[in-house]
Amino acid sequence: MSIIPTWLQATYETEQNVVIKSQESRVLDAPARDGSNINGVVVEQFVSVGDAVTPTLNVKGRPHVVVTGAGFGGLTTVQSLANADVDITLVDRRNHHLFVPLLYQVATAQLSAEHIAQPIRSILKKQENVSVVFDEATDIDVDGKSVTLASGKTLTYDFLVIAVGAKDSYFGHDEWAEHASGLKSLEDAERIRQQILLAFERAEKEPDPVKRKAMLTFVIVGGGPTGVEMAGAIAEIRNHTLKQEFRNFNPRDARVILLEGLPRVFPMFKEKLSARAQRDLENLGIEVRTGSLVTNVDDHGVVIGGEERIETETVIWAAGIQAASLTPSLKDVTQLDRANRVSVTRELTVPGHPEIFVIGDAAIIKSAEDKPWGAVAPLAIQAGEHAAANIQRSMRNEAYTPFNYKDPGSMATIGRNRAVVDFHNMQFTGFIAWLMWAVIHILRLVSFRNRAMVAIQWTFDYIGHNRNARVIVDHSGDTK
Ligand SMILES: Cc1cc2nc3c(=O)[nH]c(=O)nc-3n(C[C@H](O)[C@H](O)[C@H](O)COP(=O)(O)OP(=O)(O)OC[C@H]3O[C@@H](n4cnc5c(N)ncnc54)[C@H](O)[C@@H]3O)c2cc1C
Picture: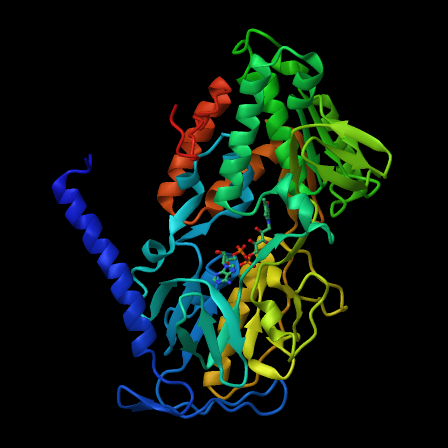
């Protein structure tokens, strides 16, 4: 029997219908972009002259912009085209935009999924020139200027913006994925949270001290911001949240080990800040092992440097990324790197294809000095703005302009009251840095509702050391 009141069920069903209907109508009603005639509208083909820099648009009617991915890059592109004379179709395989930088807080029970995610439709409901399609883009026909979706539908485009983000890279050892969870989606975060909470529960019931020790050993691979933030948050759970909650062991005995292959954590920060971060981590009781290359991961442990084995049942992977998907369908028209990322022109397009932009983590975006920028949210956002601006330039028959990233600096938190902030000419550490980190992250959340919920949650957490999202839900269907 449904526990949803009848009036709410009706609303819910209507919403469901609208979703399906709008998907269908977008696909069928999308103006033809290939010169054919659908719905009585004849649209001439987009013509590009030269390579990326001087494209000329020759489309009668409104150009169709297809954006794949509603993360930082894709969503920004779409929002930057709000007042443009274009039709936009935004395709995402998820129904929500995710504020990825706070994902680790969902994985460590500080925030819930709805704090950091918002339905894409609700974000864009007032932007009339965009239709949202909940589907996965699986292939690109560059000559036919169309994108195939997992549902079998195709979308023709005048401009394509690929903003599919990244997935974990296990450096050629995909088999490790089964034993070492990455952190890229809400599903990953909830899986890791269950794994951490269940490890403590199982340890409470485990009489064998050797097995219990393995259960209470948490290994994080990768000493970049994600790895450091995860390690700091697990240490906080162990040191404070679970205090006095178990009878057969002291949660403080749990080991948190951070492995980094390079000589220091936070390799992207200045050395002084890396050193401070390492001290902060060690003060939290985290074992920081730099220069430690993982050579194997299995069900019961990790191997470092081919020799040393650490017995553990929880390995979290924060060590490398590759383009999420879709970019391999460009392999016949452009070169991809080993991580399937597209090396784009200075204008952010695929070489020889000024109608295809690739932005964010799926692209290798270089500075004027030819150095690749790191995969961070501000780069994806600024690239999204620039792709939208270049599309509009093209519509005015103006030349594309090159992208110049304005690097705002970097920041990362290391548990409660500790963070490092590097604004290039100014650096901050400790509580001040942590406060800056908290304020900036709250302001960057996509809606006022999310900002308010996170601020309230953090305040309670700060006062009481509580982690409210600690309920373990069995998704296996076994309720015994
Ligand atoms: C755990 C973690 C913490 C991070 N912390 C920070 C931080 O503190 N500061 C910072 O600046 N950066 C941080 N980053 C990096 C930052 O999140 C990324 O650089 C940024 O999200 C990249 O934006 P994007 O638009 O390229 O991709 P994303 O934001 O990842 O969005 C990609 C979108 O594409 C969709 N998608 C993927 N494939 C398909 C497909 N085939 N069809 C349709 N849709 C598809 C996905 O569902 C997703 O919505 C962090 C990353 C991670 C994983």
